[in-house]
Length: 93
Image (cartoon, rainbow, N blue to C red; front, side, top):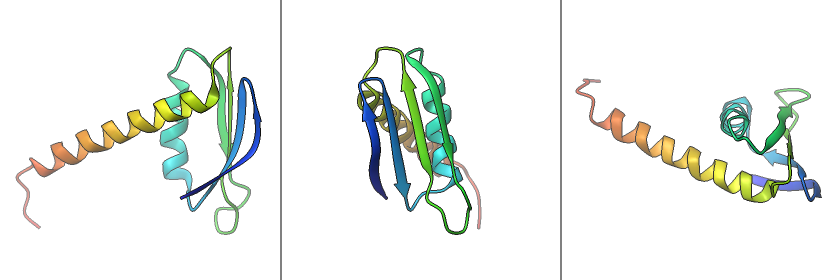
């Protein structure tokens, strides 16, 4: 995935997430929405077949870059926990 910074301010960030879609954007949005220092978090995809997601984050006196890093780390931990739980399942293909 390539991340392109469209706009960056002290308490806001707009990025384009090349190679991503609703699945990742929803997970990231939901993670950030649970943070007290986040005022607004959303994304848009103009057309799912040809457009790249544009992600918007506004904070209340928090560094949006640090929050994105925290959210990415949290998603990584959740993914690892899911993978571990899944591998422990006794399922046959």
